[in-house]
Amino acid sequence: MTRVLEVKGMKKYFGGIRAVDGVDFHVNQGEILGIIGPNGCGKSTLFNCILGQLTPTDGEVLLDGRPVTGLYPSQLNRLGVSRTFQLLQVFPTLSVRENLILAGQEHEGTKLSRLFGASDAGLTAEANRMIAFFKLEHLADQKAGGLSYGQQKLLDAAMAFMAGPKLVLLDEPAGGVNLTMLANLKDRLEAINREQGATFVVIEHNMDFVMSLCSRVVVMAEGKVLAEGTPAEVRADPAVVEAYLGH
Amino acid sequence: MDQFLQLLIAGIATGAIYALAAIGFTLVWQTSQTINFAQGEFVMLPAILALAARDLLGLPFWAALILATAAFLLLFGLGFKRFLVDPMLKHGVLPLAIATMALSILMKEGAKDGYSAQAAQFPSLVPEGMVTILGATVSSRDIAVFVVAIAAIVALQFFVTRTRLGRTMQATAQNPTVARILGVRVERMILLTFLINAGLAALASYLISPIYLAKFSNGEFIGLAAFIAAIVGGFNQVRGALAGGFIVGLVDNLAAAYVSSAYRTAVPLALLVVFILFKPEGLLGRREERTV
Image (cartoon, rainbow over all chains, first blue to last red; front, side, top):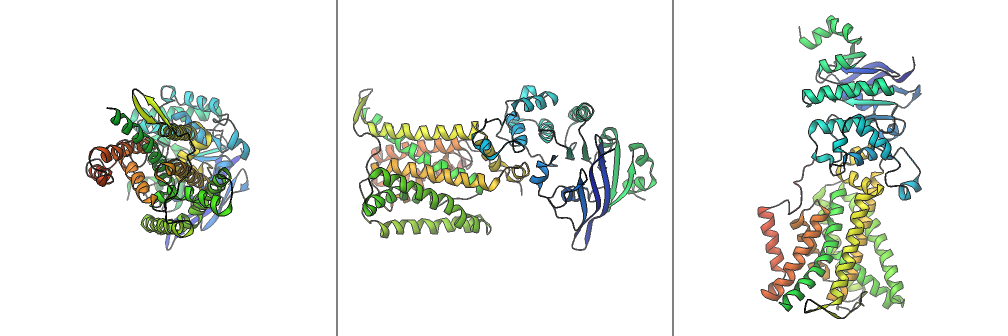
C-alpha cells in the first residue's frame, strides 16, 4: 500500500514545553485516518507542523516519499495538500460557487492566464460538481456569509476537496455542528472517500464521529502517540481508556 | 425649484468625486488597515503635478497629464505602500495613521513650495456649457463629471465582483491568512489596491480641479469630505462609500445655498457627529468583526 503522507520523529518544543514529542505516523492511499486525544495533547500543533504553519523543532514530513518538511502552506497546497480550519474560514462576501473557484484557481494556469484568462479559471464545472456532491445546489449563488454554520462547514469541506487534492487534512470538522448536519457531513465524507478514493486525515474531539468514520485511528496524549489501530482496537486499549477517563 | 435642481445636480457631481476618493480610502483600509489621512492631498496633488509638468517642462497638456498620472501612481501607489505603509504598519495602526498625517503636510507644503501658493486654472477635461433639463439650466460640466465618475465606479465594481483578480482581491481583504494558504499572492493584491486608490485619486483630482481651481490647500476639504463620506456610508463597503459621497456632496451644496456659505463645511461635520453617535457602522456598513 502506498503511503501518501509519512511523519517521522516529529518534535515541537515551545521553550521547555514539549507540545509534540516524537510522533511517527503515516497515511495510506485511500484511507481515512483519525487523530484523537484529550485537549492540549498536541494534535493541533502536530497539524500545524505538518502543514508548514509552524517550524518543527525536529522531524521529517514526506509526501509521496519526498521530503516536504518546512515548505510554506501555499507550496504544500500546490503539491496537493489542502486543509480545513477549526474556525470557519470561508469568504463571506463571495458566493458559494465563487468560494469553490477561489479554492482551486491558484492550482491552475500561468501568470498570463491569471490576468487575462477566463474569470472562472475554467473551474465552474468542477465547482458545480462539488456543489452537487455536497448537496449545496440551492445555495450555489448565495453569499457564503449568509449560510448557517453547518452549511458553511460543508462548504469549507467542499473547498478542501476542490481541484483533486492528494491529501486533505480536516481540523475538527464536527465542532459546533448539529446532529443532522453532522450525519450529513459524515455521509458526504464517506462518499467522497469511497467514490473518488480521496485520502484524508481528521483531527477530532468527537469520539463517535471519528470512530464511525475512520478506518484507522492514532491516539495522542502529552505530545506522544499513545495507541494506534482500528477504532475497535484503540477503544479496547487500557492506556487509551485511562488517558480519556482518568485514573 | 430651478435653483434647487441646479444645486441637486451640482451636489451629485461633487458627491461623485467625493465618492471616488472615499472608495479608494475604504479599499486601502480593507486590505491593509491603513487609514490614509493624506487622502485629500492624494486628490489635490495629481492636478498640481500635471500643471507643473506643463509649465516647468513645457509639455503639451495631454502629455503633462499622462506624465503626472504615471508619476503619481509610481510615487503614491507603489511608493506609498513600500516606503510608508509597509514599514509603519509593523508598529501598529495608530503610528501608521500619524505617519499619513505627516505625509499630508509634506504633500501640501511640497505643492506650495514646489509649484505655487496661488490657485491655478485647471483646464476642464469635459465640455463646458449649459444645458436645460426639466426647465432648469444646469452646467454640462456637472453632468459630464457625474457620468465619468460613475463610469469609473461601475468599472471598478465590475472588476471586483466579476473577474478572477477582483475575486482574489476580495478574498485578500476578508481573510489574508487563508487566501495566502490557497496560493493567492496577498502582497501583490494589496499593492493592486494601492494602485487603484492612486488611480481613483488622480481621476478625482482631474475632475474636481476645474471646478475649485488647483490649489495646494484643496486636500483639506476634499480629505474631510471623503472621510465623512466613508464614515456615513460605512467604512467597509464600496457601495457605502458611494452613497456617503453623494450624501456629503448634496448636503455640502444645499447647505451652502440654504444655510450659510460660511457654515458650508460645518454641516457635513455635524452629519459626521450624528453618525458616530447613533450609527457608527454607517448606512450600509457591517459591524467590524476581526479575529485576533
